[in-house]
Image 1 (cartoon, each protein chain N blue to C red):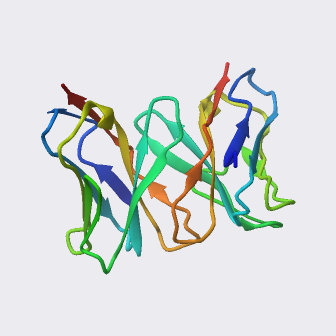
Image 2 (tube, chains in turn cyan, orange):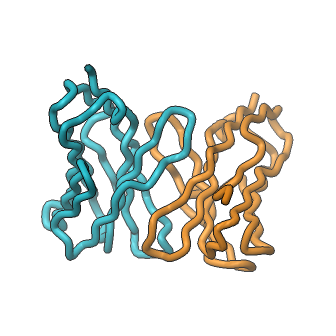
Length: 112
Length: 112
């Protein structure tokens, strides 16, 4: 069956450290993958998109990698801040009309 | 621009009642989606539309119906509400089939 698994439900790190979130998938062949941030009581907000022919993408303190052999994407936040505390969702394209499939999310808490 | 607007934000229904979640977008995007989000389960696609007059089922369409008579509006109809439909519902749009998704703020529905 098709699955999207994000490494852990919750991740706690100290301010200034790098947070690394994992997204693994099975029985999908996505052309691209996206990462979203969701704050409590709000809708998800788009962060980054990475395509299957791209190994890495960066945006300010964010970095995403995409390994189609391992069927895995890693999402890094460097120099993390308490304001980065949120739930982060990965989503991939199952090959249709951008009807993205989402992982359950990882709740990141950055402690001062 | 308001983006994606959903109403109502909160609603309590009795088992067997029906209701419509309204969604309108002012981004002139062709692609629209309805997702539901349950704790620990990730976002699940209910229905989607690639343009006015065209709709299709997602992963979990049972118990729901949609229509798309205009580019702007994509209402979601719940017939004969059941406790299993207690969830947070998100209306989403995008301008392309490979781009970022724009989420509404969500509609929290409780069926008792």
